[in-house]
Each structure stands twice: as C-alpha cells, then as structure tokens.
Image (tube, rainbow, N blue to C red; front, side, top):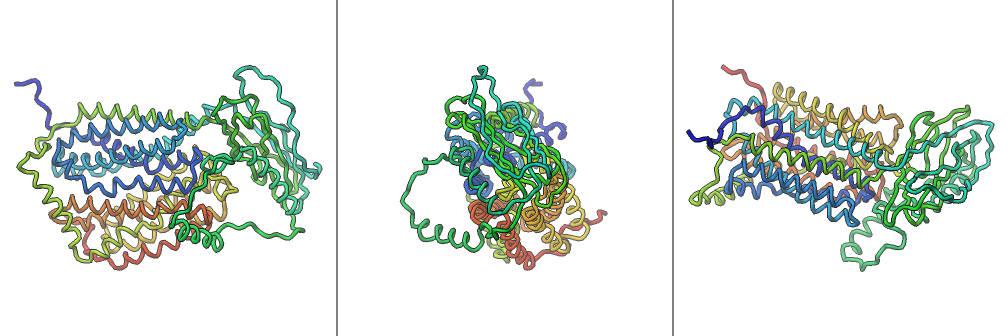
Length: 624
C-alpha cells in the first residue's frame, strides 16, 4: 500500500467552517471595511462611493470566467492558490496605506483582492458539492451560511473595533476638555491667547489646551453673533489647514483642468440644479433671534512633527450633559506647518439650559495609517494560515479533476447555457426584479458608515470607528442573522409567493430608519443601536425573498450556471447605483439623500408585483 494515497474524504466539520469563513472575509473587507478605512483616512464620500462601487465588478462578471475554474486544475488547487493571493492582496494594502498615493495603490490591491475572492467563491461552492454527498450537502448548508455570517461579524465588527483600538493606542496621550456651564459666568466671548512655545523634552509630544476648563454662561446670544464667531473660528482653522477638505488637499494645491463635454453640458448643470433645489442651504434668521452661548478653546501641539507627518486629533463627547455640544473642531490636523499655531474648538450650550451643569470631551490622536496597516497585516497573516491549513486538510474528491483536452468543448456548452438563461419566459420582469429589488439599499449601503462617522455639523452622527464597529458588527449582525432565520421559516411555511410582499416591505424599512436618524441626530448610542437593529432585522428578513427568487429562476438542468448569472445581475444592481451615491449625497446632504433613497423604493416594488412564482415553491413538504 502506498504511503502517498490521498484521502478522498475528511470529516466535513474540519474544513467547511474554515472554508466559508475564508470565503466571507475578503468580500466584507472589500465592500465594507474599505469604505470605513477610506472615510477615516480623509477620502471624500464621492470618491469612496465611486471607486469602491467598481469593486463589485468581479462579482458581476464572475459567471464569465467560471468555466476556466472547471477546465483548468482542480477546485482544491484554485481554493489554495486564491487564498494565497488574497493574503498577498491584504498584505499589499497593509504596506501601501502609508504611501503618499495610498488611495490609488490600495485600490489596485483591492482589485486583486476582489478578483481573487470572486474566483475563490466559484471554487469553494463547486468543491462543496464535490466533497459531500447529497445528504451532507443538505445537512451542512446551514453550517456554511452560519460561518459566512460569522465572517460578516468579524469584518463589520471585530476588524473595525480592532482598527479603532489601534487608532487610540498609536497616538499621543489623550486630552480631556472639561466644560462648565453656570448662570453666574460672564457673557463675554473671546479667543484664548495661547502662551509662547517653550522647549520640550525630545520625543515628549502632547497636546496643550488653553484654557483647561471652558466656562460658558447660560445667557443666550444673538444668532448673528454666533454666526460671526463661527466664521472667525472656521476661517482660522481652515486657513492654517487644521480642518482640511475630505480628500486632504491643501489650499493652493488644486489644479485647473479643461472642462470635458460631460462636465460642461451634464455634470455641472445637474449639480447646480440639485444644489439649488435640494441642497443644504444656510438658514436666514432674524437678527433678534437668540441662541445658546459659546466658548472658544485653543489646542496646540507641543513639538514640531517630522516632515510630511500629520497628527490628527479627534474630539468627542465623553460624559456629562448632552446639552453642551461641539460646534467646530471635531477633527483637527496638525503638521510641520501649523503645529506652533493654536487650533480653535467652539463649544455651545443649549438655548434652553438655565441651571449649572458640566460635560467632558475627550480628544484622541491615533496614527490612522499605522492602525489600519496593523489591521490588514493581521488579516494577511490569517489567510496565509488558511492557505496552509486547507492545503493539508481539504479532501481529494475523485470527481475533482481538470478537464482533458477532449472535453474542452465545454466552453461552447457554457455559452449555450448562458444564452438559455435569457430565453426564459418573462425575462424582462426577471431582470427588472434582480436589478431593482435592492435599488435603495445599493445607494444607502455606501453612505451608511460615512453617515455614522461624519461630524454632526456635516449632518452625520459623529461616532468613532470603534462605535460603528460595535453597533454594526454586534447588534447589527445579530439582528440581521435573526431576521434571515425568521425569513427562512416564514418562507418554508407560507411559500415564496405568499411571503414576497411582506419581505419587500421589510427590506425597504432601511431608508425610513436612516431618514429618521438624519433628521433627529440622536446623541444616545442606545437609540442609534436600536435603530440599526430594527433596520438590519428587517433587511435580513426581506433579503430572504431575493435569495429564494434567484434559486427559483435557476431551477432546471443548468441551475449552477443560471444561479451564477443571477448573482452577477445582483452585483450589477448594487454596483451601478452605488457609484453615484456619494456624489449625490455630497450635493444634497444626508437628509435629502435618504429621502431620495425612499423614493427609490418604488422602482423596486413594481417588479415584485409582476413576477410569476409557483405558489408551492419554498414550502416545506412532508416526506413519506
């Protein structure tokens, strides 16, 4: 007996959980983690939405190269090699984050990651059917889904929390800004004078705050006076680049380009129209209108940073009365050119506040590039481990083999199969359903995390990276999973046709929830988490219909290929609307953007009313 006999079977518990965990991680990294990372690194919403939406393309065109996985090598070989390439892509992202042109370079590695992940999906799903018999396939279908969702939790939650942890541990000592409010304090408002810079011990970087305690009177001031102070503070911070544009460009670095035909005849007129009709306009207030009092605090760095190095200070409410808010200075950038100048922070009380109270704000400064590099290095190491583990642990099914030259007419058969999908009855309604069912979500999903992270002045909720990771990665994913499970139970009892409209209504709760958050901007994280839980539960419940419908239209002789084509159209329906979502939000603001997403519900509902579905499909039938 040969010692080199390869095992055709292994205990499925030893490889299915790790295989589908490895399948989910790169997808959530490309689709979600990349969005949050770019937002934290100062990329504009327009660029984030446009360029990360293009990363859907590998999943859109995945059916076009799926025959290659069948024709060349084995599914096992593809799995191992793709996991190694995914690890290389993650390592490339980690190494390039700190480069000056990090945005372009990391996008290249994300493309490598996306194509490797899409190919890995093809191989893993094919290997699942080859490595298990029919009974095992049915038994482990829930297990593979569970570990794919565990990957979602890891990506949207634990990875974001980890990056947030590194952000707070890679910077200078945190500062605390204590704010006192009392009717007895003076109503006089002035810009604090920062003392002259004194020599500091080498390497002893820290932030100085003047004054250490901000004192605000409960006596209200005219709106006009507030506007004047805000203008002075904002102009000062922007002129010294303490507050930079979303893409981090400094004043004077803009380049003039000749306008293209598209820009001159379409983009510019459309942008002007949207800004005029739906944009965020400054309120016109009467001069006698009164508002809450304010105080200005100065913050300065103790030493000059190294050339090209930036130190970013993020301020947020820590504890105390929520009636005291941060109006200006939530994110301040210090560098070699402005370190010895004071950056101004503007605080304001609620106009209805009359009694003495206090609050504390905490300022943390992390090396964002270094924090995200650490996170991606850990991911890269994880996939190297996966690669070697599956190299030795995956079984060798006898049916998993490359096709010989005589069988390479499968290319022709594949294109015939591809064409047969489009000869189905009611193909127009089918395609409309696949492309439009998630029309609202495709735009909302790109702006959900930026909305959570953006400052309250910009219309966001002002949460930290760790807050977003905790809310989405724990409460959100748990609610999403429960919603999906309940959706499956309902569909198995009532059938897809009977439960479809309920699921359509559920999946469209998301824009309603985000519109509520945009208009109320709640301070309580419990309120935000509760809204996200409701939204994710409804989405999980509603998405069940989409998955079941793809299975339904794939039924027949070529179900594997037709299901792959359906998932391609699903990805296309997510990619195209998502590309312009950031541009639109930048123009009209978060409030109007989420209202627009509500309007997009209508095109998604109409195909749902027209699709033809067997009333018995999806119902659980008793076995004899």
